[in-house]
Image: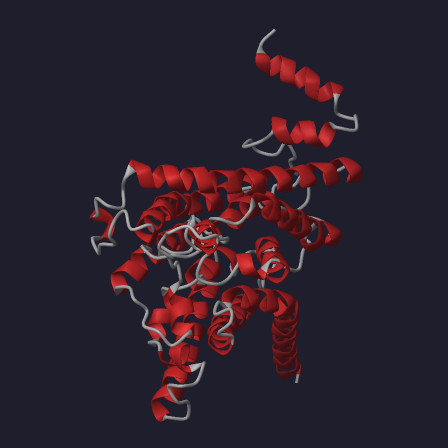
Length: 408
């Protein structure tokens, strides 16, 4: 008996059993769903939920691999074993096996914990509710390791993932029903529950925290700093990095958020495959630019002195806000979440613009945690249904007016 026939027999055997959802999820992983429509109006398309999720994951893989190299690169720079060079993607100091292995050892466990805990909860709820396992966590499981510091303890990540999946998703009904982006819900939980592990100048470089603890214990070691560009600007310091390094990603930061170039390429891939909304991406950039220009004008006018705690980020060039921090990653991979974003075309323009606009506003006015894209997207997730409601009502009123004119 061949393998295909055995699987068919097992599937029929467990069809009505308690563990059927879990078995079917493993059996049909990466395959087309076995459900087809037979009558009524329907759309025929080659895509489905699994394929859509896999395309998004493919767009994030370059950011993951680059993050592994960058984790090792920043680690060895901080220890003084290598010197930072502005050699772009052709730097021999960056693309080394040692850098990759350091990143692999630190980041791969984050991916395993994220998927292990999240999918276990998804399977549990599927068995309890007696429905098929939903594929929505496939993308969330990859997003989470890319938006956290490299040295975050695994148990913290596990607790946050459990909270995000249960409270941010399952209580609303599962995939397609949640009102908040699950990955950002997980990150928000980490930030508010464990703020010392999500901000500051030591969490972004592997080994920085342990090294400082050794120094405090009396060991004769040099203190190292892994401060991000946003952290430096918030304290009124210079960025300390070349513009090209900021754009390419040779800077400290969350695992997958540093390389704006790779994020843009991933965004173009999502737009080309019609998975991500170009309207949301473009309008977010426009909103961020406008808010940045407003702050630049305020800083140049003298209303805010250089001694103000807001001056550093307020006076930063408006375009610099687009290539530092998590703005690009949040705009491309999380603001475009089809479940929590606006659904109407006009609503997407409004939604995206406000995401970008509010992101830079929060970034400047919250120097203690100068990263506003997370809070901006979560805020707009809440208002997305309201935006769509008024867009639809506006269209209804326009059509009613046209109808009255025609019948008059």
